[in-house]
Amino acid sequence: MRLRLPEEDFHTRIQSGNDLQFNVLFKGKPISGGLVKLETQKGWMKTTQTDDKGIARFQVIQDNFPKDEDEKAEAKKPDTKDQHGGKKKGGWSGGHTMPPENKFLVTAEYSVPETGNLDGKAYQHAQYSVTLTGSYSANKTVSESKQWALLYASGGALTLGIAATVYRRRRIKPFKEVSFDER
Amino acid sequence: MSVKHYIDRMNLRRFRFWFQLGAFVLLVYGGRVAIDLGQSLPTFSCGYNKTGGAGVCYLLPLQHQLALPWAQLFSPMGFMILAGLAMFLLWFITLNKAWCGFICPLGTIQDWLTEVRKLFGIRYSTYSDDQFKKLSWVKYVFLLILIFVPLAIGGQFLSHDWATPFCQLCPARMVIPLLNGDTSQWIIDFSSTGKMVLTALGMFITGLFFIGSFLKKRFFCFFCPMGALHYIFSKLSIFKLKKDGSKCTTCGDCYRVCDLQIKPIADNVVKQDILMDDCILCLKCVAACPEEGALYVNVLGKTVFESTKDGFVKRMGIEDDK
Image 1 (cartoon, rainbow over the protein chains, first blue to last red):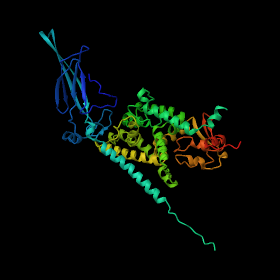
Image 2 (image 1 turned 135 degrees about the vertical axis):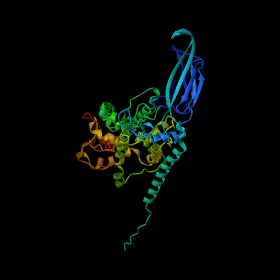
Image 3 (image 1 turned 90 degrees about the vertical axis):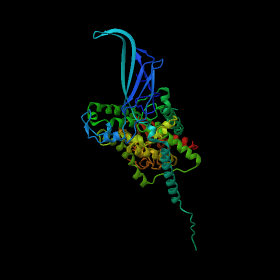
Image 4 (image 1 turned 120 degrees about the vertical axis):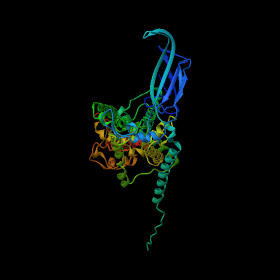
């Protein structure tokens, strides 16, 4: 099973760069030295072994870029029906302009000495294998900018500040002395 | 001295300051002590304030729910929108628009910015009658945006990049999480055109918010779609602001203290239910009125706070003739 990310909640999505941890259990107990392989939709894969607590660690690769050739091809696909019978735009589900998710497959394998008989053949070892799927998206930091955000906020503040100052100045009427000749 | 007499003579300014401070701490930091008031609060308890929020502003789940695919929205699943609305109304009917004047954290921040301006001795800005009329429809435009853009997403006319459009524009998304040290909302998201437009506008409006609230009392409340939504349901509330026109001398004290520049509060001597769409029910008008019972607050048909000569004299610090 996948262990939760720090401060993970309902809205959390796995992103490239996240450190994922998978706990491999065999008959309810963690196994050490088990082989765990993570393979992404785009073909990247890595194999590692579980530690003493049965945990295997992977850092999700950044292989999800906008305007990828595959995505362009996907986006050109004709509209289809979604699961609710509604029209689904071609390309990425939900009509996103960027691919929201790539999938990965995690496979854990564990071999134990175990004797038995299968189809009339005796065996000395049993190979157990389990899989888990998940999805991940491009790391948000790739497409986010704090500098631009501050620039826009400053732009808003300056625009209103200058507009208010100019407006106030224009409303000030210069002092004008009025004298009456009462003769 | 009866309790009612004590309330009528109270220092509303001081009461409001402490009430707002308490509500502010509860809604902005209450989540840190596991307080959760649900997802239908009729005030800007920002849902993006993940570390400290003690509840979620109703506008966020409403936009999420309205963005459901139409096949789901117009099925029995759509009843969850009615359930959310019912919960919102349960909260709302207790205090009416006083949620804005006494509880809204963004409103409280604006009041504090006004106090800062006073410290600097800078005079406040007002709208002319013409500007007031021209700008007063903006909150209804925001209300239409937060209803129809999610519906267009559910109907697959717009992409999910335009999701929660009002929250993306609302300065509370940037300001309230910041009070918990969270700067994650201070970004422009370039991942798509929709997100880029919304986040850029959101940041620009945040800049306007700080300067606007510094110069103009309750600057953002004038444009707030929550205020517009409140007004639609205000007749259902048990908490009402009323006026007895026969006792009003149209002196204009109530108008002069009104942060939202609501003129009918002084001019209208016919309407008894005097709550207007821009009102935040801060009750400053009641406290500033010198006429006995001309303005009063009614809860379930019982007057709980009203304008009195005695209260006016005490609040103004005027020596009584007696």
